[in-house]
Each structure stands twice: as structure tokens, then as C-alpha cells.
Image (cartoon, rainbow, N blue to C red; front, side, top):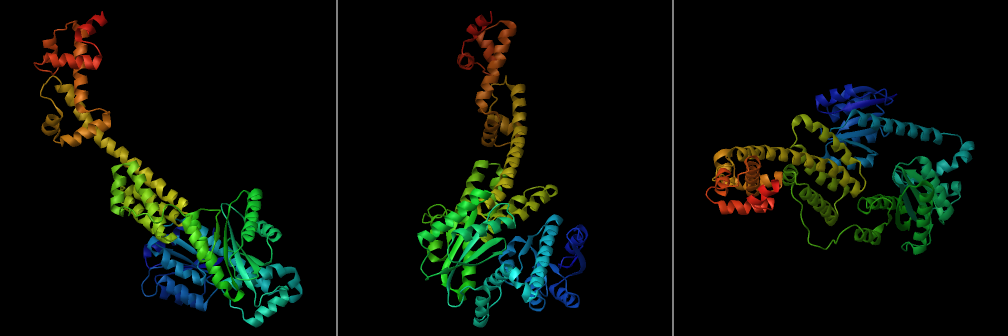
Length: 528
């Protein structure tokens, strides 16, 4: 069982997580809690845990400083960071110390348990690597591929090798390293995939690509090192070979592969090339999964040109969070969809980073959530955790758009219910007072309902589909026609006076014919 230390300055959060998480199910045991980074570090010194779950924003010593100090003294201790959406960039700084797990508050026990399971698995893998490295030299031939992979992983991530060490590995692996010009190729299989898929992808690459030196898997991505003749940009022939690798893999496994090709540079710059591929991989946020991205100045300009609309067009700034929330509350779905499109257009025009784009949408989503009654708000706030998952702009849009449009429809129904109440009362007034020639929208609104006539008129048409005056005339004519059916009388003066047309029988006859298509006399004959 992996030992876990829980750190948060809020007592309720510490107690809540301590009680709701099934530690044993995650393969862990909670050995203690702390209320600050300083207290946590003291506990780590006394009894180093395997995993620390820590908030970022804390007094005395914040979460990031705790990560830094712990990494220096106990590099094997792993962290899971908890924080709000505003600390995305802040949390990313902890990545240099190997922190890869970050949960957005509020998070559920399932998310914490899943993260614990992943970190515990990483601890197991790390221990397995250490045990592998301690095997005797006589067994090295059997594990040479794994040694190559581990050497390459350390070379590009966290260990600096000197010239003598590189010379040793040149002899051990029988491959040229010192003084070589190299290039990195990063393959990211999208969708649901397993480690076997990356293994198959590596085998396909070995068959099709030339001058491969080393390969490894880092964070679920296949990284290959190629031997280059010079530092010139990749040729069309090189790009065509990479496309063949991607197409061959997709044909067999039905999974798209996002690929990044780095600059060519001396092997001593391998760390820079690795960072270059990681940064370039974020272009798939705009380009979508399955893209081929050429890193470096030329490649980035190409990615920007393919990313979306005319980037030189005048920007159209989106509405602020509160204005956007008001738009949702109005129930105007079309206007909300237009504003979401404006938000996405703004993200593309300004070339916002992934975290900036998330923050922009989260701010508006939170403003919308504040409109919901408190007893129902928790469900929608729980969805905030989904904003940390998407790796492409279309995915992030879907995570944002689905609940926002759902709430827009909900507010539209509420607006309709409010409108319907006023309209129903107006319909009752018509039924009660249709004989009164003085009945009109203005008199009903001001004298009986105490409402603005213009607003009531628009509401009436929105609910019934017709203007109030047209409805009132039609209602009066229907009552007049009913009178004719019951009595057979077509005395126009009486019909006009009895049904709200006062002493204007001529106008009554015109409206009657316009409404029913015949005069009152013709109507009675048709009945016969």
C-alpha cells in the first residue's frame, strides 16, 4: 500500500477528502494530514510518504514551494495538486519537478481515487525501473532494448550526460552519438489506446523510417531520435515517410496519430528539441487531432495559417462574463450560439494558450452557474472538472457549449412560463369583456394588468403567434358567428353592438367577411 499525506489549509476539505476517499481501493493508506506546506514538509522529513495530495494556495508555504523543497530532499515523492481554475499556469510550474497530476476543485472522490491509482502505478513502474537498472551486467544483453529506452528518456528529460558517458553508451549500444546532428519525431496516438498500440507504432516506424537511433515512450507519446546529415529543414521525402507511418498505423488500428517533427540540431541540444516538440504538440489544440506539425519558426507559421479564420481581420471582442450570463438567462439560443462562436473566434485570433482559453470559458461558465438556484448549482459546478480534460479546441467547445445551451433552453422555458401567465390572464379578460368596444391592448395592460402595453403586446405575440388586435377581432367574430348559428338572426346593427364593434356595423361586416370569408347573410345561408 502506498503511503499518502493530505495537505490543505481548509479543515473541511481535509476532513471531507479523508472520509470520502476509498484509500484502500486506490492501493493506498492515509498516514496523516497537514494544514500548511511547512507542517507538511516537517511530516515528510519524519516519515516520507509515497504520494502527497496538496492544495496550491496555502499560507506560510504554498503548494509549489512544498513541491520544490520535497523534490530536492526526497525526489521519489510524487504529488497530486488540487486548486481552482485560476492556477492552471501556476500549477504548470510544478511540472519541472515531475508533477503531472492536477485536479480542479471541486473534484469528486472518483477523480481523486483515479489519480491516486495512476500515481501508485507510476511508483510501481519507477521501482521496476530501478530494480531493472540494478540487474547484473551478465543480464544486460537481455534487457538492452529497455536500457536504450531508459537512457533516451533520461537524455531528453531530466539527466545531463557528459562526453565520457555518451562515449560509454556509444560503445554499449553500438550507435553514433557524439557530434551527431539529430531530429526528434513525436507520435501521439489519439483516442482510446494502449501501450501495445505505441509498440506497434514504433515497429512500423522502424520499418519505414531511415536512420533511427533510439526510441522511447514518455507520457503516452512515442519519441524517436533520427540521425541527420545536416540542420536543414525536413525534406518532402522525409515528410512523406512520416505520413506513410501514420497511414499504415491508422489502417490497422483505426486511430489517428498527431505527429510533431522537430528541428535538426546537435545531440547536445536534445533537451531543447524535446521542449520544442512538447510546445508544438499544443498546436493540435487548434489544428485538431491527427495533424502533422513541423516545429520551429517555419512550422509554427504554417500551423497558424491553417488554424482558422482570417487572422488579419479586425477583432470582434466577445461579451464579458456577466453580459454572457445575461444572454443565457434571456433564453435566446441563437444569440448565445453567436456569442459562443465569437468566443472561439477570439481564441483563434489572439492565439490564446490552452490554459488561457480554458480560463476564458470557465469565467463565463461560472457566471452562468451563479444564475442557477443554489440547490441545483452543485451539479453544474461539478462539470468544471471536465474543462481540464480537452486537448483540442473543438473538444473544449463541446464541454463548454453543451451545458450552456442546456441552461439556455431551461431559461427559455422559464421565460415562456412567465409570459404565459400574463397572456392567460389577458385571454380571460378578452372572454369577459369582448362586448366592450373600448377594450384594447392599452386599456387591458394599464388598467387591468398594470403592465407596459408594448411589452405585453410582444409577449402576447410570442406566446400565441398573433397580434392582440387580430386575436380580439377574431374572438368577437367567432362569438357573432355562434350567435347566428343559435338564433338565425343576421341583424347587423345588433351583432355589431353585441360583439364589441359598437355603432359601426359596416366595419363589423368587413371584419366578419375577412375572418370567415363570407358575409353574415351568406354565413347563415351556408348553415341552411
